[in-house]
Amino acid sequence: MFIPDLLTFLDGTPVTTPAQWQKRRRELLSILEREEYGIRPAFTGCAQGTLQEIVSPCCAGHARHERLVISFDTPSGAFSFPLQFLYPADGHPHPLLLSLSFQSDVYNAYTPVEEIIDNGFALAHLCYTDVTSDDADMSSGLAGCYPRRDPATDWGKLSMWGFAASRAADYLATHPAVDPQNMAVIGHSRLGKAALLCGALDERFRFVLANNAGCGGDALEQTKHPGAETIAVMAEAFPFWFCGNRSKYAANPSHMPFDQHFLMAAIAPRFVAVCSAEQDTWADPYSQQLCCVAASPAWALHRLHGFVGPQEPATVPAEYAEGHIAYRIRDGVHFLSRKDWLYYMDFIRKHMAPQTQTCV
Ligand code: GCU
Image (cartoon, rainbow, N blue to C red; front, side):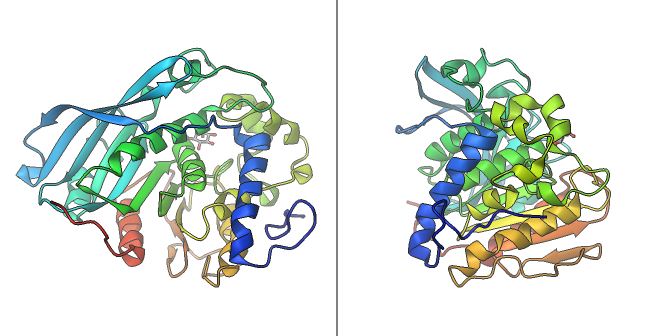
């Protein structure tokens, strides 16, 4: 097995200092955009948030629930999508969990709203299909707002969902209930992949939380185990999540000039938390753990700990949250559970930046 080296520039020179890391990080991102996710259009403005409605009561009156619309300019004119935003009604800024979600209603089986609020977090909830449909249609929603130029490198849907999370962050970072130093983006499964890409590209997120992301997210392709999803399977089922170039590697992943540790490493020196489930063989827990191992040199370069844990398969249940890459494996199936949220909130509390903003 050959896993492409993180700390060598494309021209063969070694990356030896944190100062060089920013350049190498841009290289990694451009490889990932060109070969895997597609090239995200540049965005130079700042999205606007408009309050539509205050939903009350919320969490026994302890929280405020705002229905917002996020809007921004695109080459085809303004585009907007709804966002639900809930936060403790105590007049203070809070760490933010920006959730890319499958559900339109924030009150759903995957999101323990009251528990999040009671833990002192703000929660922004973005339903992914409000941004663009989860299929090959590139003519509607956000997909339809940008010209398609080259199927090999045009952006895929994972990138679009992540882009929308960044536009939500444009507005949320200015909201008095949000501590902009402590923003996290979170997603489960395909939205865990989108959250990883969003956080890799957008340095405003101090925390990136990937739940059961697996193939195309936080699982190394070149260590895949029997029963795991592969690029080949994905190229048939979900080609529209990626750019066309990715399918080139379906027959032979060992020809890839990258692997998923590039994506995780592009988050360095910030924080990333990964959660696997024992029965989620499709996502391949051990390849997820190995991805954490393989990404760690990017943190070591900064004299920080990446993943602090074993190289051999973790014994379930296990949590390794000492370093900047946290890895957890729990029993059970593919799901974003209440306990997963508790683990993510603990991780954030442990590594929060001191607040620089006070509420007026
Ligand atoms: C499918 C897909 C996975 C994805 C999952 C999901 O199982 O193969 O890659 O993570 O759907 O998003 O629920």
